[in-house]
Length: 221
Image (cartoon, rainbow, N blue to C red; front, top):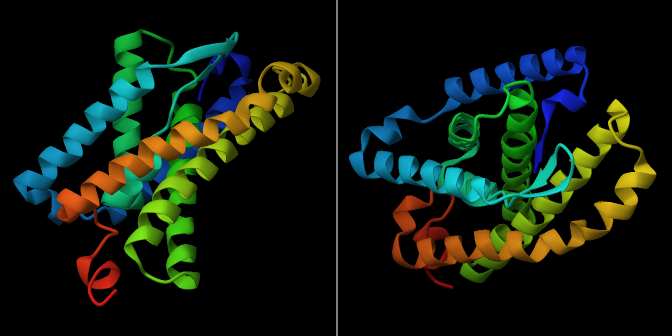
């Protein structure tokens, strides 16, 4: 989801810029840069960022200043971890902003909404699923991949709605008629996109997925 920054006050935009700067600094600090010294991993990471950029160009405006697009962030989080997911989504959003020629007012807000929040939710759910469910191939693909991605997509949509209502850009009654009823429909495409990507990768290129291990999810199962 992409929101036009002009719908928000300058105070909120500066606050979100500060929050995003803190998250980005943390991601840069924690990122496993040594992993990207491997040319193959670097190429996979950059290719994923370009793919994300292309995906985010496929958006649809549902209200003035409010557009929907699939996230794909759960997949990149499970592939590279939280820190590189935050950095990768920021790079993808930078590319979208430059190519679309849109204003920079809402860059930080959209980076949080489309990058930081879904990456954080995906990482937290990965930890909880590992803790409470058995480490099994189908659990990983169906729960970590499909289910997590769908839940993250829907929750991100509701968060965007809350921001728009609290900022006064739209009333809840307006969004409840034109946007909110369709959020559950975001579950399936988001789930299938991320789940399909992960199913293919763990089957053919498991070394590209940091959160998957043959020893944990396949051996002896």
